[in-house]
Length: 424
Image (tube, rainbow, N blue to C red; front, side, top):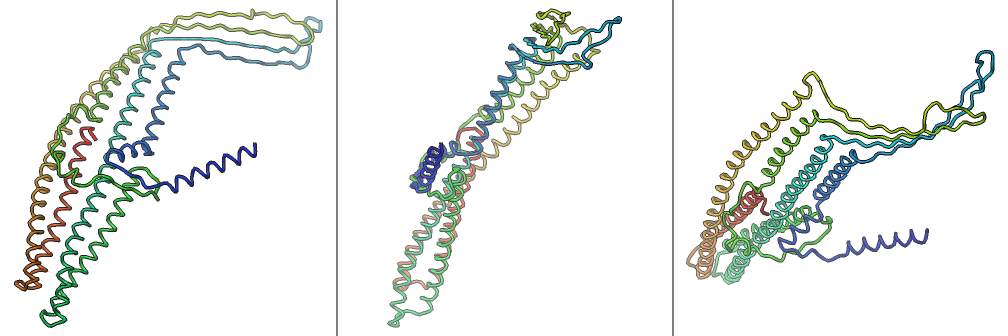
């Protein structure tokens, strides 16, 4: 057994080392969402809640099944004998073996099993809501990494073009054909871009860390994203998605709450119903020492039908309360549906506005990139000053920032709407 335990320990260590040295996670968006659902601790808790509800259902079923109880007792009196009419009578020690079997059923037990099944369905709906949240977190984290990488790429392009002009000005300044001030001003701009690049690298690392957390992967994991930003923002997927509020998890839960209230009402009405029970009891007595005489028979059968007659209005009040709970559940559903309809309108407006902002910012960025390239050419031939070029470069940086911000707005608005429709 010691050798086996040592072998299992070595095997566990080997498995840990293998997982630690595993390669990076190569992910598409769909595989990232699937990985997050599989490894999320939230989903694990949801599965455990479902299992707990299933065992609660079997507990309700067992209330209608046969129950068997056994007992074993020993009894001895002191003193061992008593004086009965001038005669000493010995009181022997006794041992008793008891066995009781019983079964009972009524309407409330049957409805209780149905309520247990509905509790499982409620937990499954809660799991769908958790899965929706996990997918939303994985989606936004995945796209955030792509957007951070796109931000770095735009800065790198600007720096590469500006660096060419800076090198040209430095060479011209050495031979006296350009002012050193122009070179110094361009160098300052390059330093600004270098700071922006370092900030972009940090943003990428933060976005990847957030993605790893959303995936439920080990903190030291490496991720590689196979899809590009153009896949999500350059096709027909960037649009206001169609969906129905009836498919949302919230509405399904409210519908289930109404059904649950109706079952509770049925359960309260069954309080007027009878209860049928049957029992068999065996009680065998053994006398130690002097033989004794058993006054009762060892086998007993019992059948009982219990019918409620009068409870001073207690059952009637419980039925009325349960009926009101149905109306409350229906009212809450209607109220929530109205709130979700308002939320749907707002989210669609946010997404439409974000798409328009994205389209305009993208077009503006393309124009500023074209202006920047033309300004570089003019600066290289000396038709514009370094101040003019720096102004154009700053405008380009602002356009890039607006463009990146519009990407985040589209991503968040679209994810919120898909999450509302339970369509992630």
